[in-house]
Image 1 (tube, rainbow over the protein chains, first blue to last red):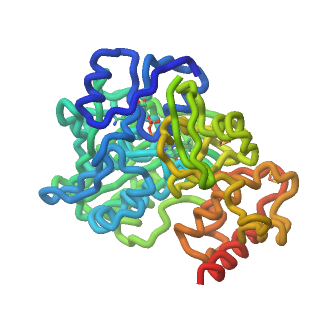
Image 2: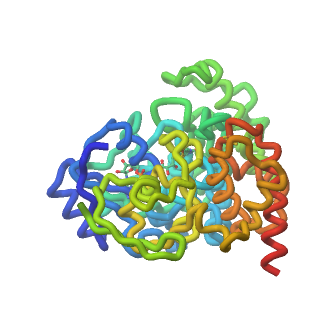
Length: 273
Length: 159
Ligand SMILES: Cc1cc2nc3c(=O)[nH]c(=O)nc-3n(C[C@H](O)[C@H](O)[C@H](O)COP(=O)(O)OP(=O)(O)OC[C@H]3O[C@@H](n4cnc5c(N)ncnc54)[C@H](O)[C@@H]3O)c2cc1C
Ligand code: FES
Ligand code: FES
């Protein structure tokens, strides 16, 4: 690792001040993505600003009918939270499928969202549920947040403090996980919301995206039958050693079908072995 | 250099360290607790698992400074004198290791697993929970058996 200063502020304000004055400083949450990248010298920070000292940033609560998850809430806290299980069980299921228990003990929702890994799970839930990201400066709709490969609309020094999820009527996440890394080869989040059905796909392109053709079909009827004959046109899909873009296009359809099935029958397994 | 202080296996330790020091480096190089291993150094293999405030985590992906004030338990801290921890004993009895390189991490992960999910663990649960621990020798079969037995023994000891 290149040399850096280590800071552990006690408040978001204090962290904001450091990040505002040091353009090369970087916030750290669980460090499960930041530290591996820093160890490979992929990046050089003047300071690492550990948000772990900010009290209350990991709170999970209901507020005006919405589920609010603090940015520092760890995957393990989300998967085991009775508040999350009661409001949006699909979100707890999703958290349970992230990486491995050691990663889940450290990694957080805020870090995952800010990192915007093309194969990460949470972005699918944010986009699928139409969540709002709360930062130290403003609120950003999930629809406007994910802009590219590891890119978000967050500005330099902007700190996510929480994610606010409207509670859907039903929702489910189906993930075809990579057999070794456990990241999503393709993951699909389907949610029946007050404004209709939303479908968000992760793992398949440079960043998470919605699939309007499936949304229209499923808004008419949330059923597997509604998907028959619907063949969305996708932009550039990822192709790598593990899955060609044609294969990914096929798996998207299959994951959406499984997520619909899980919406209708919540005991349907949401992940491959 | 920055001052850090933490409790490791019940003893308070303090040092001035480079902020880049990983927890695993601090444990192995500063404290000479070399039971915690580094297998991959890329957050994949789980050979470096220790407990920090009760949570099993990868010490190669944790800064030592983040653990200031924390309670750390390493593989060296599990046994009571000459008496092995029930999970350690179960690994020995069930041939849960061959070269032994992955074993400290396996055991630390398994002990936390039992605390989280209880003493009655089915094979599927154990295999899923070992997602973050790689073994290049055993083929996992005896590790799974060892953890099931160790969990039962931990449960019996707690009664
Ligand atoms: C072995 C392994 C397997 C994994 N498998 C999966 C998987 O299957 N699915 C999955 O989704 N993820 C997976 N991950 C990633 C994991 O979920 C990480 O925890 C997550 O991507 C980053 O969260 P973090 O809290 O550790 O963030 P950090 O690593 O601390 O930070 C990540 C990035 O976000 C920024 N950041 C952090 N917090 C904030 C904030 N509050 N505001 C603004 N910016 C912030 C940091 O500056 C950094 O750029 C895996 C990781 C590992 C090591
Ligand atoms: S050495 Fe830490 S995970 Fe491999
Ligand atoms: S026993 Fe050799 S790596 Fe597991």
